[in-house]
Length: 370
Ligand code: GTP
Ligand code: MG
Image 1 (cartoon, rainbow, N blue to C red):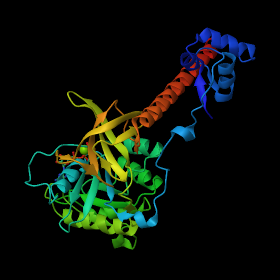
Image 2 (image 1 turned 90 degrees about the horizontal axis):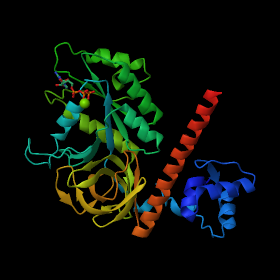
Image 3 (image 1 turned 180 degrees about the horizontal axis):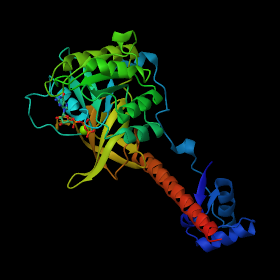
Image 4 (image 1 turned 180 degrees about the vertical axis):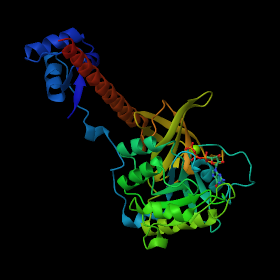
């Protein structure tokens, strides 16, 4: 249900909060400045003050990934989006770096590549894979909790000399909860003490049955350090992805998710966005969480400027008016009026939630004192 705080309501009517509280009291509603009141009550108060209320409803304002569905015929195959997870020090970063070096379009190895939170690799066969570098399981869960389904596949990295460890188990739980298929990369197979067979057996205890043991979980023995079997890992990813039949409509206004965002000296707010549907173009007006902007520049994962980014393509977006949060959805809208309206509505809602939390805090403190 729609709500507003007494303070916010007063602000919007340019009235004093005490007068609003008094008006509410006349209506039999005892309130404080941080009190959250429902829209119906607010409307009555507004009328009492002789103003007219224009209710901006969730439906009016909110636009989301659950928006228009694309016609089957408009869908085109897209690259799989892969997240690497695993226990600390098992080689997630090393593996991502090694996989990145397999990119056939990135030019010379060792060339300066921008580190953005996600990148796309073109494999030897010409297929593309997008890798997302989640900073940790918490971020993954957080994004999922906020409804952002970022990843199609999880690569579970397990060091062959260490086996399944607590965070490996955690990662398995996260992937299962998200209903995302798991491919196991048994890493550090270059080490003399590596025991990939043991890793496979350990997986059984977590209801992951490797293909070699009669199940359907694909395992690949790799070494990020020696760069062995990286091609095979990629082929396995593509095989698994094929079964998922991943498609998106590239010919529509873009929708995506913010992978990371920060304020940068001289560049302003910069967000790494993974486009999920449609194509994002320079000049597009968009909403990202409770922020909005107009795309001033798009920078790809090689640090070059691009004019557009389609489904499963990660890009850095410049031109934001504020810094959104990781996991925020990004949606292109048709005008800056609309973008501003959505952004203001969401910021207001955020403030209301905070105010409500604050009010609850005071109440709890009150009870504590009793
Ligand atoms: P966190 O981000 O801290 O959780 O670690 P990580 O999983 O990203 O591991 P990282 O890639 O930082 O690697 C940890 C250590 O293992 C480093 O010293 C790497 O050099 C080493 N390492 C990674 N992959 C391999 C491998 O295939 N073989 C060997 N021998 N060492 C590896
Ligand atoms: Mg790491």
